[in-house]
Image 1: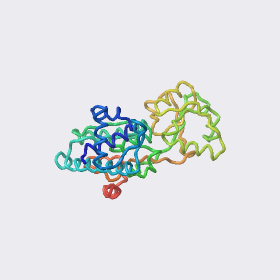
Image 2 (image 1 turned 120 degrees about the vertical axis):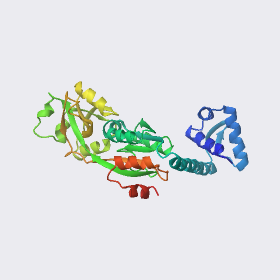
Image 3 (image 1 turned 60 degrees about the horizontal axis):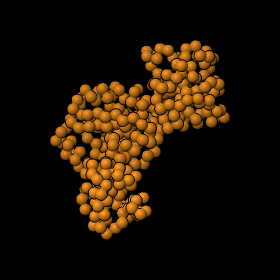
Image 4 (image 1 turned 90 degrees about the vertical axis):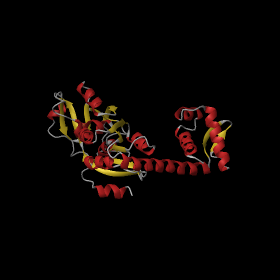
Length: 305
């Protein structure tokens, strides 16, 4: 048994049991993949994969167990290499952050700037996606940190740390009737077409819950994955926008008016998450400390123990 065989099993699962996609991922040929799989199964005297004719369709029961330990073994090897790198090259490496558009645009810039100035030799990569996608990136070793509001807080495979709480505002054109409403209520908001986030993003369940508790049906005419798209269509007169307060900048969004709606919705919490047990390099811990100043170094290390 060797590392190459363990990686092969993991890549087969990752690529949906497709021999051709696995071959592409490992820069080899399909016949070579088939031969290596058979050799590994022969060595173990076990069938790891279910087959329908020549097509691989899934893992057998022992295959599932071996896949689990293969993943852990590869992650442990990665951690060993990271430990070596941390002592040999204290201030060089990579930091890969998976996050949503709103966090990337409005929450992260100041800490990214500070990090880049302090660690100029650490390569930064920011990947955007839905909360589910960014959690998967961390779990599959494609990112170090996941930063989002919904969809990651209850992921038992991630160590989660709360960063900050935030709420929402209503944006509109400056001549919209809602600007002159005597009081901002959910009933008032429900009178107008609404442009807001896609369900998987930025606290949509909190928005839905608030309307449901009032037995109101909001007229959501367009959803988007980022605040800038929402602001664009609100400016075009498609409706009023319901966005994170942090996404409105009165110095830049001069064509829009914003009314704070924090009294109408529960606060949402943004979290930073990383795979449990992963080795955190010194610059990674420093990033968390800067992004989540309410969390101490001791708490970070204890959570990851």
